[in-house]
Length: 346
Image (cartoon, rainbow, N blue to C red; front, top):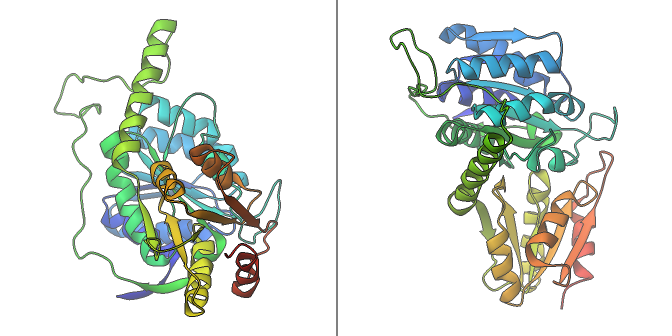
């Protein structure tokens, strides 16, 4: 067990997952990820390179992924926006990588306080085209490590980019983390041109001059995403079975909501917590089940309701949904949330 900042834990976890390459550009509150990569990767024969821009960094990630390496980058808000064209190319070429997004407040330059305003561009593909990325939602330093290792495995399995979508509070938090004792290695990838092989089955590319060919490639991607939606959904439930009102939030907000649930249950109120651990794939089926069971949902976000709209899409606008939010780097307190929830208790 090690007391470590979450932004540093992701790098140690990435190295244990077989990552050997990091290309990035510093930005608060994600800069510690780059600092840790610069510190640790050379000791395992890896490469750290600070690029001249976020655009250059994501294209370096493309090159390393195309060469078969396990590769990562990290940024926040404005930097993620700049990377989106490259992410679209990675998704189109079916190249795996891991991207750490330590969210800050926006829009524009905003400020460096925590927010959850990157949901739309990360979960729904902020670049052009019909693509998706795996998206994981840690709420502590241990999950920052665990989900980073899982992200590398699933990114390789499904050949697609994977995000760790976190916020400034989680990224800057120091907590105990248990790391595995053994290091994984990147698997052999049949689409990579190795020195011992004169041919390969797959040409790494995102261009299709034929409209029919591009449509079929799009359909292939959608079939892959549909498979992921049936097999990779992850979420945590606390006291949901007997709850009349289920609170829902992710990241740092979910930690606040857990305290709200604990306090209200001590008073005898039947409340529970649903915490998404994956944003794509999303827990839409479970949300439908909860509504059919007669439960009501209280969704809290540090955004204008970007996840809330996905909940609405999952269960319909007529479902009993309540919404509470803060923006601009303002973080709700447990007392504030408790009073907000009280208004909807039966």
